[in-house]
Length: 180
Image 1 (cartoon, one colour):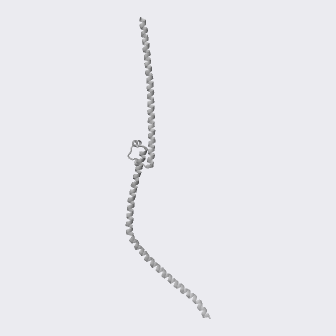
Image 2: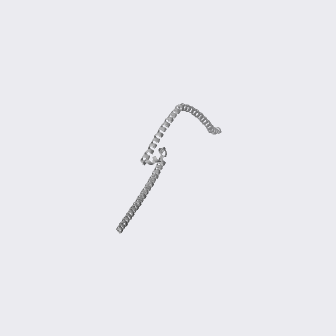
Image 3: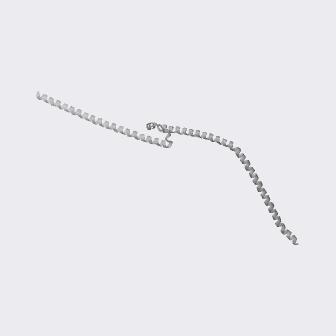
């Protein structure tokens, strides 16, 4: 009996040891599995972070290119986070809105400048037209006096030439007549 109980105890201890070993191996496998899953999760999270970082860099690069083409004014007052959260279409729309607003402002300024220029031009004409008329009349009178003076000089020259021509033509004729 004692032997029987001892055998029974040893078998019981063996079973308990086997059971403990089994639980230890299962716990070890579970720990290895958990560690593997944890490592896989960390790797996935790291990949996601890297992907987000790459996306963020690409988005910022696109935003910078848009800023180069459209200027920085349409995007003033926006934080980097706000710029990153906006879609490319939103960014383009914001830039186009700003450009159309600038265009309308410039057109309005141009109209104001045109009005001022037109006003000054008309005022200048009203002041200058009488002055120009006076100058025209004076120039006309001066030209008339000059022309009359030149015409009188021409007539005098023609008379002198004619008299010298007549004298020079008559003298040889008269000499011939005297010689006969």
